Image 1 (tube, rainbow, N blue to C red):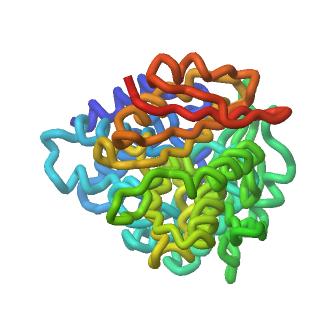
Image 2: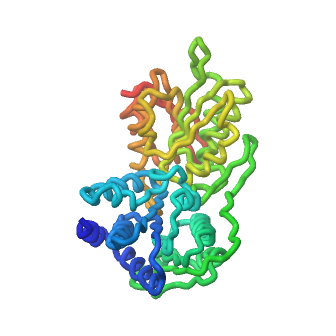
Image 3: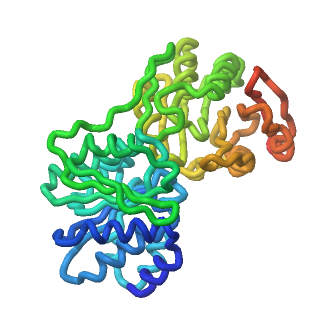
Length: 400
């Protein structure tokens, strides 16, 4: 069975994965073996390699914690590992901990503490933002200081996307930071000697009329209000008093699908409070950092006439069909640096399932993307509610 893990890891490994694994192996020379943390493992090779390593040692109970921002990636990793470990027993399956699925916590530091892990190594791919790197490095340094273990970090990336500022960020949490030797277009950053008394990662904050926006880790737009989301919120807030309500005056059920840092939800909840309109809002995103950010942003509305639930999910798959009267959508359209106008499709498909009878979808998009045809393929009624110099807001009702 372990051979299956090794073979699967080798088959999935990309050039960057191999560079990271070599750097990590050198870091562990002469260090007592402990638990392993894997960060942003898009191929799955790093996790499978780490899992094979800990399972090969029958006299220890070392574990691997993998932390992925993407819910899809986390779920796929859990499913793959369960399949490859089938037949080895529950103990082997439990050696892999997927943050957010096998833990209550989505943030790295709390997940490590929740599982009582004592890692001596973290490896993975460099995040796209300095804020996410700061989040990881502070969490690992703070936990290592409490766990009193030797600890090393190895993160690899494309050299053209790496800057000296990344070293500076790591140096806030580690006493020794250096770049490994490059190979092809890739290079690894390495760190060890966690500093004492490292402060926790702090959220980026912006004060707006509706409240305080908070951004953690690599959430899109940080703690700022996204311009497209702001335009969507303007129109949704104007529409709110006109939404049909039952004779019993039940709360309007709203879904913020792809909620980001929670800016649209915050604006809508604030407006509902001004109108004394009962609102039950669900904010959901497949990005763990978005869910962490929205949870803090929307915390003032956890209880009361306006209530909110924030979930880590894939297109709100965990919600029942016909659950929402109003669905708000500010969809992504970039995969890395590449424009991808097809990313909206699964979200629109989800909207057709999730809207209640007489429910309404509001979608904002960059006007040049021309999403109207995609809505007309799925809804009987589509109309434009607003258009400015950059964005368009469309309304859609009655799924086909």
